[in-house]
Image (cartoon, rainbow, N blue to C red; front, side, top):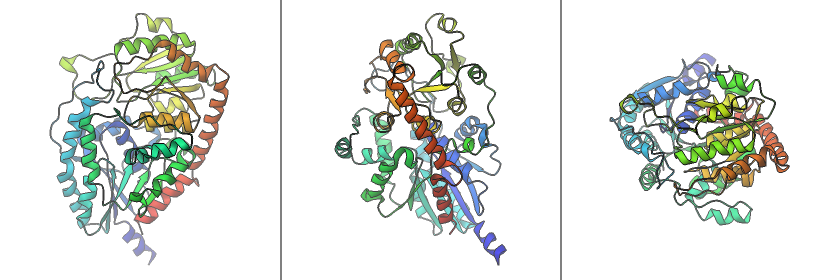
Length: 468
């Protein structure tokens, strides 16, 4: 009897459909890996071949192998993959990725074919899709044995604010001032997002990559919104650090980690702006000089924003490099380290020498920083990042901002403003309280994602629900 029940449970198939931008891709890849090995589940990850390659090439080694995860390389039209425009004067948003987003919209038919195939041989098909891949929910709704869940790669606070901008008044009364939504994305991406979210009506529930120590009251606020009242919400993040917290850490052999090993505890400022920030030459120079003036040790990841296809050949074989001021690296030798290309961010943030994080405030980056108890020096660029900066600095009090956010791409933040922000966390008295606040939040987040914690319980509840 028990064997029969176990055999039946093996017939539940989970199909994960990400948006192929790095932050979204990584979050859903981590989610898929967490489900692998769960009794009764067969887990599938479906997107284009180049973005499957991207996900595999950038996953932290702590996650181990992915031999139990079934990858499906789906066909999409060829798309241009131009470099980012570092010196744009109109937007900070990565508009150069729009051809990739446009091509992504053609995945509906390949997803339909895949789901019909899996449906024919499964008791139940469970589709977990990015909020901007809602065509997968539409295809799932056409099948008799399928259900879908919307996976949100954004904070609950931003979801409430974006869906209902008037919520800003309510939040202001609670002491949280949010920057306006004007200018956070381009008109083209806004149209893409509206098309994708307009389809998003058939999901059975929502998965949130967040946790109560970071967003408790905003999770409750989201659950009370009319569109979510009758749907299940599972809060099961932050996903990225879970493999490290589980003790599966296998540190990557990277030069910056050996350099960090030689630095005093909490003495190093980590500087990184993620995969969608293209910084103007003048701004790079101001940042370099701001780091020098701060007098602090630092690790600075200097890299261009991702192209739509990160493996596409550079223009005429020429590799673009962000130019630093003359002799900058020689001047900072011993106290600063410049890293070009991909860096092991989770390993850097979890290193005891790391004392603060100058960040663009991407959701993955901020959750990783808070999980590791590292305060954030917030420098948001676009999308949900200004709202996340307000969450971290204004609500959680676990960081400071680098000046005031503006959508104007031609505005340069000066070296003096950068120096002051770093010193507020690393040197001035107010930094003690900020660092202590980040430490306390980190302990609470790590407890939530550890075995027996609240986020793990939510993940277990989701698995129990879909294998019912």
